[in-house]
Length: 252
Length: 252
DNA sequence: CGCGACCTTGAAGAACGTCAATGGTCGTGG
DNA sequence: CCACGACCATTGACGTTCTTCAAGGTCGCG
Image 1 (tube, each protein chain N blue to C red):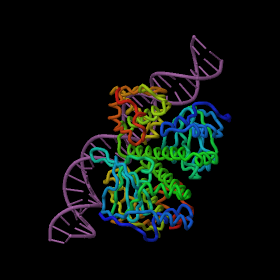
Image 2: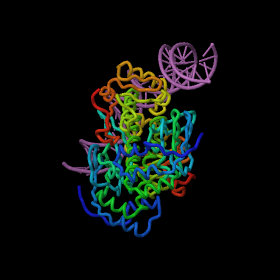
Image 3: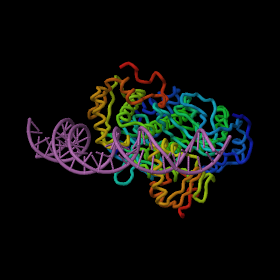
Image 4: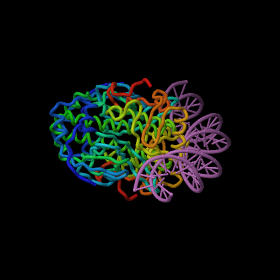
């Protein structure tokens, strides 16, 4: 567990926000000037836990994070996966108690920013505030889409949909291309995100492989047929509210 | 379908926001001064639809609304239920295309406010803006809680949880008391909200009745044993981020 | 080379869905 | 006031999807 300041380009938050709005030089500088303590995490380490009252937010620099809730008897629901540039606990600025936990998926690098510094930035840069506000609304839209899957889609469709979503999000910020994406998510993680057992996830993934839609190995996803995967997954990217030109190409 | 201005007390948005923050007289006046066109709706009428690009927001004055998404073959997922004082499509200020639809559950009265007027209010009253932001974050917290239910709870638990949530929300704004609440939600609505078939909802409700936890008839819910219902439903109201004193009394 | 983490497989059972018919209740119009 | 229709709740029989349990198998890494 190390803590150190961070001042390297490209700043992940700048990259993320510029996929939503164009920033002025001043706005970019204001973001880069945010005091941030950097910390390196191993796999499966909690960052904030349900019940905590954090005084800082967490910016994901590298790796993936996930949010989750635990129930008794080991039942777990994963609520979201996050990629570089996300601020998964931005809500803690306005809701002082955490109603879920946040942890690293694989090894990850995060930066902590004090709430007061974030609030200062939001006050000084209304357009940045707007972009972050918009981003939390997109988060909520993703929650809704997951609800649709959890409530009304079968296992194979849920998995295909999630893979399309993850690829699309990574593609939008430049973390994936050519229908290939880093994928440090185990089948048990998928199960907990999709409300399934890991056994059934395994069998459903094999279905997708058998149809030659994907290759999904230890740490990477390769989409072999984007259109058909999107069709099987009932994937319509409207809910991600991306710029059209940031969506994956329709062609295989 | 009628349209007329609205100037009556108590203003539902004032009542709702005062359950979150205390408002000054100026803030109350600013809200009451919002130009609003009132419309009366029958049951099951769409207000905005997936794909629309609205230029106004909808304030629910009386009755209940719900948000939903349709899939093919009649599959439907209800995403949220809303009560008086809610602004279910506030997000349309920042996300210009609707990714889901909004409709009335029973007969309802709503007021439409132009985006530009809402934005004016938010600019003039930062604390109102903060309260509304907080409210959309609570919405997102409710989505997460529903994801937990859809993914990891069985039918009986899901229903009990939803009933606890609805009663608690209504209680917080004074729409329910004495463990009794208006409930214009059909079993088919419950099914579409909980990711179940209406047949299975029916059988699970009968389970709850048999344990003498609830009486649920045409239009009202009576909770006969709050503690045990909350226990069966694994209900912990933390995620609603209410003032502690606005929660239902622990005693039966 | 051995250990731990993850993936894969088979068999049996539980939870939930589907289909189809019946019954209740409420408002409405004759 | 009664009869009707619409909408909703209820019931039974039967299928399907998914879970659980338990046992290997594979891969990477110290």
